[in-house]
Each structure stands twice: as C-alpha cells, then as structure tokens.
Amino acid sequence: PISTTRTYLLTQRTLYGARYYALLDIQGTVVLHTQQMDTTGFPSYLGLTEEVRSALIQNTSSGAVYISPVMFPSGSEEPFFVVAARIRDAIGVRIGTLVAAFPLDGLQTIVTAGKNTAGSGSYAILIDENNLQLVHGRNDESNYVLISLPDEDKYTALVAALRLPDLPYPVGQTYDHNLNEGLQLINQQPFFTAREPATATNLSSVAAIRLATRPWVLAFLQSQPTILAPVVEQTRLTLLLTVVVAGFAVLVSTLLARIVANPIIRLTSIAERAAAGNLNLQASAGSTDEIGTLSLAFNSMINQLRQTLQGLEKRVTERTTELAQASEQMQYRAERLQTVAELAHSIASVQDPAELLPRITQEISSRFGYYHVGIFLLDANKTYAVLEAANSKGGQRMLARSHRLRVGEVGIVGYVAGIGQPRIALDVGQDAVFFDNPDLPETRSEISLPLNVGPQIIGVLDVQSVEAGAFSQDDIALLSTLSDQVAMAIQNTRLYADSRRTVRELQLAQRQYLQEMWSKTIVERPTTGYEYAYGRLRPLQDIAEHHAEPDVLSPLDAEVFPGDMTEDAAAEPDALSSAANQSGKLVIPIGLRGQQIGEIDLQAMDPGRAWTTEELELVRSVADQIGLALENAR
Image (tube, rainbow, N blue to C red; front, side, top):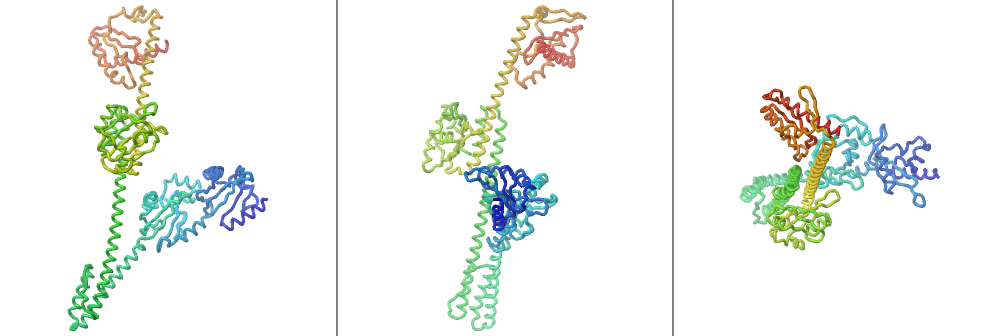
C-alpha cells in the first residue's frame, strides 16, 4: 500500500539523511513523494535535466545503480545529488524507479572529520569534474568555489544544466594554475605543490587521488611551514643547546681559571668551532672529574648533532635526486613526443607509396637512432607479412630476396601480425631466439607494433636496436602512436593512388567514347564543316581537301589529367601568336575534354597581319564554347 511504503521511506529518509525519496513508474511519472502527499504537481522524472534523466534511464534499465553529479537548483535550495535504482516485481519485471536525493551534508561531515589525518594542519577538499570544490575540510565557506575558470560559454552552459551555482561569471578572478595542472596529472604524479585554493597565500604540499565511483578528486593539503616546523624547531633547540653549553664552559673557565684553565680553554675552543659548523671534533675526556664528564657529554651532543644533520642532508639529497630524475624523464618523454609529431608531419605530405615506405624507415631510424627499421605489409590473403621497406643493409638484403614471414607463426613479426598487439623482445631469457637472424647480427632488442586501419591489421612496424633492454612499456605507448600515424599515411597513399587510377580510367573511357561518337557523327553527316568568306556561307563536303595541313594544333590527343593542362595552355597563346604573325593565317583546334573534334581556320584579309594576344585569347574562348555547343547538339 502507498501509505505503508511512504511511512517506510520517511523512516529511511530520517535514518540516512536524504532530502526526499520518490517512486516513479516506468514512464517517469511520480507516484509517491515523501515531501508531498499530492504528486500530481511533479513533472516527469521530477523535472531533472535532460542529461541526468538520460543517464538515469540508461543505468536503471540495465540494472545498475545510478549516482548523478551534484546539481545546484535555482533559488535557496541546497545542492544535492540523486541516487536511483530500478524496482522489479516478484517475477523480476521492471515496474518503476526508486529515486533518493541527498544533500552534501554527509560528504561535508566525512571530509571535515578527516582533518589532521595526513598530519597536523592537514585537511581535505573534494573536487568534481568541473573543477568545483564540493566540500572543503577546513572552511565550509570555501565550498562551491572553482579552482579554475572555464570560458564564459561553457560556464553559462554548466549553470543552465544546474552543474554550477547560479552566480555571475567571475570576471577578473585569478587562480593558481599549479593546483589545476597537478590534478590533471595525478595518475602519473599524485604528489605536488600548490597554493591553498581559498586564500592563495600559503604554499601547500598536496596528495590527490581520483575516486573510483565518481569522476571526482579527493586532495589532502598541508602547509609547508607546518611540515618543516619540526625541523626548524629541532635546529633551534640544537643551536640553543650549543649556545648554553658554550656559555656554561666560558663561565666555568672564568670561575676556575687557576685550577682547570687549560682543559676548559680547550673545551671552549672545541665548542666554539662546533658552533661554527665543524661537527667532526671530539673533546678530550681523559680525566674522571667534572671536566671529563662534561667532555663526554659534549662529545655525545656533537655526535647527535652530526647524525641529525647527516640525516637531513641525506633526505634533501634524496628528494633532489628524485625531482631531477622526474624532470629528466618528463623532458625525455616530451622530446620523444615532439619527435613523433615532427615525423608524422614529415610523412603526411608524401603521396607516392614507393617513396613513402623507405622514407618512413629512414626517418624513424635517423630521428630515434635505431639500428634497423622495417615495414611489413600483409598480402592479399593475410597469410604472409611481406617486408616492403627497410633502412639497414641487412634489411636491404632481405628486401632483395622478398623476405616474408607467416602470420601468427614465425618470429615476433608474425606473432604481432596474428594477434594485433605490440610485443617487445629483449636480449635475455626465452625471447633471445627472435634475434637469430644472420642479416641483422647486431640486434639486441626488438619491438614490433601492428599497423591498424580501424579494426583491420594491414602490416607490422618492426624496430630493432643494438642496445640490450632498449625498449620499455613507455616505448610501446609512444611507438603505438607513431605506428597509427604510419598506418594512416600508408592508407592515405593507397587511397590517393586508387583515386588517380580511377580518374585516369574515367578520362580515357570518356575520350574513347567522344572519339567513337564523333567518328560516327562525321560518317553519318555529309557536311563536316562550313566556310564563311566575304559575307557568304557555304558547306564543306570534305574539310580535309579544303585546306592544307594546319600550322598549329593543340596537343589535345595527349593524355590529360586534372591540373595537367595548365602548363600547355599557358604555352599555346605564344605558339599561336608566332605562327599567325608569320602568315596572317590562324588555325585553332576545337577541343572537348582533351579530344580534338574540329578546328577553326581563320585567314586575315591582309596576309601580313599580326594577330594580337587579345585576339588569340578571344578565338580560343570561342573555340571552347563551340566545342561544348557541338557536344550538346550531338
């Protein structure tokens, strides 16, 4: 019954601190709500945003429990997040959805309770995927503050989607980018230094981790002055103790100058030198009186100070070494990625497959310093991986004898071509058998990566080095990016070659078609030309008998491809002008798509007339239009 269910949900709301519970039917209509008895006023799916509604329906339909991102309703309502699960009847059929809305008070309590967990003065902050502080463990007034500012359009969209508080865009506000940059790299480096997000004053050490169930980050911060306070205090006490001991020695030497002057003077001298930083001294403790006892105590103190300072120096050295190694590693990765980008740019402009593959092997070898680089492509039946290009001398010998490997059976290349996964072979253990190649005797390490175009394997990129253990898992990620670029370049050159071949075939077929049709038309029509002279027009029965061989003909019977006509077309006006200026006669071919179908024969009234460039261009334009008109008429 509805009343019993509502009573139970009210009890659960009080027990778990939920804002409300609601029952929705399979269409999203609210049938029960713990805050109101009358549910007719609620919109479908409680008026949740389209993004949240779609995710809720998808997750609950599959049987999973859905947890929404934090939402900021308009007005004075506190932010909350929604948890939803499907409801099934006795036979397992989905009949509705149970939705619960929870405020952030519980998260605030958990995070606040974690203060001082990571040390004195430490506290935690919880940051969502939009870089918004959901919970601040030290100061709840810092809740719902952005640690980095998106652009204004994205900010407005997030506010409209109830993902950010409905506040004006914070123009002019500054942010500490070190915190945001450190959070972006927590998977590789979870420890870094940044300023406190709320005040941006104290420099803090940060330890962060990304949550498994939500795209949120939990970060613990502790100010560096607090971390270093024990070291500073210990140093202060040590110096104070040194000063006290030195003062006591001076006082005793003054009072007992006549009795113990020399031992006290020596002890004072040693104490002064120790206070100056020389902790490798030891006081003489030959006597058993108070001077001897004081010397022993002084020696013990010096030993403790020396051990303390040595420990501090060791820690500083270790930290410095770790930072230097991390910096060198990051710089090395950046340089390698830059090299991959430059190499991809270099090969992207190559369109000839015969030039592309050798150039890829040479570029990879020269830029990365590898001994041998080879590219294998699968044959049509995908039975063999055939070596198509190599940079080394041994690789050239293998190319000469058409070296190939059976897919999935022979060598590391065959293995990678079969399973489509990268593999490394080092000069140790069982992998050493892969280096038994007389053409490449210097190989000590090898890595092979598949060349993939979508889900299809088209070949293998094989890289070999003369260094033992030259490849690591980091190299797999780096060279996999490179192999994807190589595969894409190979595919692009193939597509380009196919396109050129198709265009060539189409143009040849078109030219043959035009030649056949116009040959047929000339046979069927008795009149093949007309002559206009002195105001009279008469047909020509046989154009070949009417005039001699033309002085100039355009090379329209040559093989033509897109862009190939530019140079010839640029040269023709000069040739026509030269011929015309000599005799006053001008012959212009009538062309159609690279095929000559006729000609225009012009004879000036003055045999010595010189045709101008403008006249030649005009006649050429008329000839082109006549060709199109004749083809349309045919």
